[in-house]
Image (cartoon, rainbow, N blue to C red):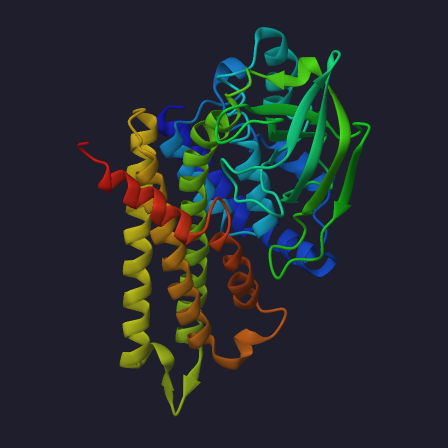
Length: 378
């Protein structure tokens, strides 16, 4: 997308976020439901096809451009941001491993929004990586899947689960594979998980697979390619997107805190005139800008196809910690009234805690970063 068209898109999204999505965010928070109608509206506006290549029916934004858009969507409700985030990235792990028939059956309809798919990796008793325990065995022309997945975003609505498992008897990356598992698969039980602390309306699901029978034609790529597709195809750009989500959410918290500091008067003086509050604002703004630049740098490297996993992890690690600091200070500026339900800053404070876990904890990011530098030059 050329720069003129991109700037028009940014202006349109900014107006949408600051207008209709404010009211929609309040409704989602009140009802705890997001619903298919929200997906349909975002799809009709073209916001779910931003990052995919034009050859697949997408709009072909550069990844660095997409990051500027997800920063804006992050200033609306958390569940709306997740829809935009998932739909603009879920095609990535499929692209390098699907065959031509699967490209027509799964990938293009997925980009066009004709089917919905959610990333299905996390398990109750495993880390989200090479120790996955969900197993697969071949029986005739089908695969039988056994295991559990949980905390699956929008598992209440998805048509397909892009599920990662391993062939029975394999370890590590060996034998891992990716399957497109239809919602109505025999042997698949879908249970909604309890309500989360924040980001209401995302509809997390717990999947139980008991000899769930998946057609052979739904295997994407070859055994052994599963986690490679999951981690390199999706996870690194997704971590950068989550990092930029932290930037957008922190920016909204800062904007609200500035408004509050200018409005609230104590002992005859606005809070904004007090040196301590000015110090908070300066620290928050600097922290946000540092995280934003880390994300932009990682986005540029992704565009150039020179991104290292450590650079994605650094953006995610720093941005999550930044968001904690900024939302803590924002709540302090608001004072006690910011702790009450119905306050936007109270919702932001709760929603921001999801990013601690999304696409790997801070400890996971540190392992990736440390490994990169400790093995450099070996």
